[in-house]
Length: 39
Image (cartoon, rainbow, N blue to C red; front, side):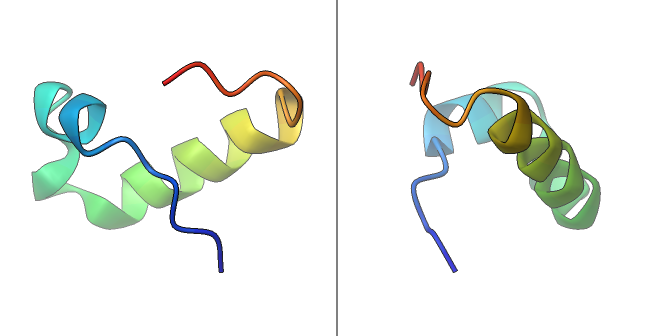
């Protein structure tokens, strides 16, 4: 499991209340831009 999630973005979006939703959303984004990781 990769742990390069941006905590700042995570907090800013308010995803701390929805970690599961954030996780799935992050995975979708990761699949789209595997090369581009803009954090």
